Amino acid sequence: MTSKAPVFEQIYQDYLARVAGLDLTGKQDLLGIRVEAQTVFIPFFNETFTVTPQDISDHKARRPPHSVCVILCQYLLLSPDRPDDDRQLVTYRDFRDAAPYVQGFDNTARKPVARAFAGRIAELAAGCRHLGGTPCDIGISCDLSYMFEALPRVQIYLIFNDADEDFPADCSLLFEKQAARYLDMECLAMIGMVLTQRLAGKDTPDMATLA
Image 1 (cartoon, rainbow, N blue to C red):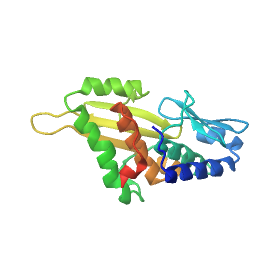
Image 2 (image 1 turned 90 degrees about the vertical axis):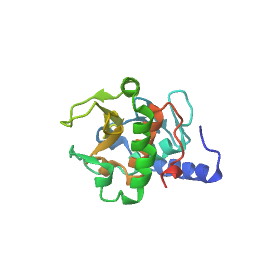
Image 3 (image 1 turned 180 degrees about the horizontal axis):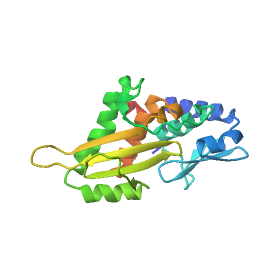
Image 4 (image 1 turned 180 degrees about the vertical axis):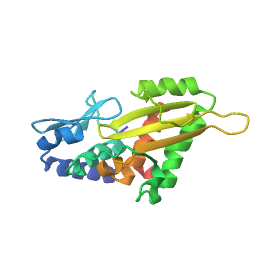
């Protein structure tokens, strides 16, 4: 659902104006996007969104939630000058500037998955596949692991261990280290939140919930 609060609309219009001033034709390969005239096509969690100077929309011509709009715009605005191929996996808290958002990330992304899918690992696996997740083996002993291409250069890995007689269910969300070159810490935290909400079949809340 799109927020109608004036502040969100003002932020949205500001992002559109800033993106409209970019020349992205030379960054299509770097970002994994497609540019046609003034329209940018960006894959995001198994769906393609369009960004124009007038609007951001999904494949049904609907404006996505505010959090998704911010992520898409920041991905374009923060584009590095050259590619980064550091595929080392790290936790969110391992990023240098993540500290202000770690608690929000845990509360809106990591912990809700553990609570929602304890004893429901088959449903979690089905949800991961529905969102375009790919089973992966990263050398960690776990009950389930999937990789998601949130954006063409930003992957997120979900590692899940179901509850047993000794421990509660636990979920870890990992990123490739290069992700910090393409998005800021607030947007990376929101990507975790978006993934969790979509797995739960809910609308993505506003990014203010990360505070």
